[in-house]
Image: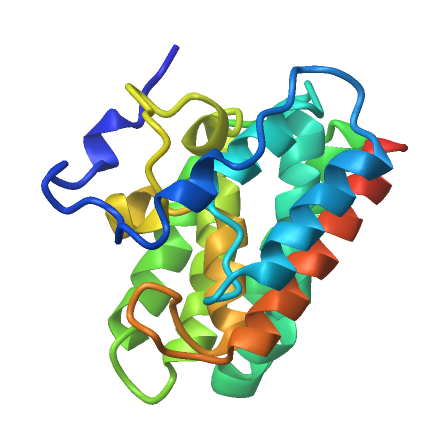
Length: 221
C-alpha cells in the first residue's frame, strides 16, 4: 500500500533539468543484485556533476534486494556511519544509543515491536529538529538520519519502496518528512545538499560509493 504521497511537494517544484536525464540512465529488472549493477551506479556517481545518486536509482537498487529488513539494514549502516557526527554536536546521548541498540535487536534478532519505532522516531525528531538551521546543523542531520530510519522500520521502508504516484522525481521534490535515511546521511557526510550547491562533491561521491558497497555486502548475507 503506497502511503507517502502526502510528503511530496508541489509538482511545479520539480528537479533541475540538469538532473532529470540522469535519473533515467539505469533500468534494471527485479532480480538478484550483482556486482555489475553496483559498478554501473558507481560510474554514474563518479561522472555526476554534483556527486549525487538520484532517488530513482536508489529505489530500483533497493527493490532488487526484495526484502524490507535488508533495506532497513542498509539504512541502519547509514545511521551508524553518521553517529560520530551526531556526537560531535550533542555529545554522548544514552537515549539515542539505546534506540540504536533497539534497532539492531529488531533488524537482526526480531526482538521488539515494530510499532514502537514510530514513537521513538517522534521523540528524537522533537529533540533535534530545532537545530537544523543552526551551527549544529550537521549533527541534527545525523539525528534525522536515525529518525528517518525509525520511521522506515515502522512503515516497512515505505518511504523508499512505496512512494505514492512516483514518477522518477529526485529527493528535492519531497518534503523533509519524506526524505530517506540514505539522503540524510549523504548530506551529513558531505556537509550539504546537492540541490543548493552546498557541501563537498568529492565527499558526497565518497559516501555514495561506500553506500553502494554496503548494499552489495548486505545483499549477500
